[in-house]
Image (cartoon, rainbow, N blue to C red; front, top):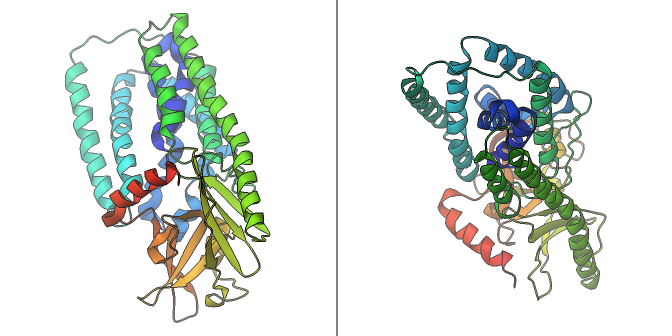
Length: 402
């Protein structure tokens, strides 16, 4: 899920464990805990494109990290709250957290391949400005008396903030390596989009904002937090059953159009649970189709050739093995005009079901080296910058049905 959704869920966890003692600061620490697993992206400058692909949503999104990391972070923050440095620490984390939200949105919408160092520089500058703003505003104030929660409360809060972050990501089609370091299996229920603001994030956020308006000892704080958790949880349960209904419609129309298949990948398109995309595999090719709950016309399935001949039949190449693992073997390969190969992850579907090189949502550029090995040179997730507005415009039209 997107960073804002994870922060909102973490804030609710923080309120549940620390709210009666810390008030609104509990939501901040919970929100911070809810975003920490995604800080694995800061390793991008240190890793190759291929390594980043397998590292993201890896160990930081595992049960192991939730347990060990939760114990460590809980102990650390508990110690800091008992020290004379807690206020400076709070300002520092608050500065970093506020900076990370808009940057993560830009990172998601516009990509990062050509701008990652610029984003890092902007983050450092903005965080520094915010830190000194908080310092100047609060330095002259007397040190408040803090009712420090117990060590166990801090640790349980971070454990659940980390775990619920990973669990929520499991509901997306991207998936999470939940069982690392014991298994690199990617858990992906694929019932909710990576960003679903209207049905999931906004109602949850509204409940937390209402809860923040009450005193920390008021029982209505916990009541509104519980309502937010309840609404979001019920929505997640709904998406599980909704996926089964959507699949039956796809399966029926595939049968009507005499399309036989061996397996399928089904998931919702970004921003809602109203538009879904499916990719089915047959012996010779794939078929991709989209279905909106508002559709009144038959599903149009795009035929996608596998082009397996463009890659070695039994490749032990590390790049190819990693890409096949990441895509769960739902992929095809295309030759590009520049001579490179394009590896398309078909689980995410296409923008307009046109099937050309720039129409696939998640794609990787690879080239064959002189030694016969393949090198991944670029990851492209989302539309090109010059077509961003038109693609999203077509998306909302498609959600409205045809």
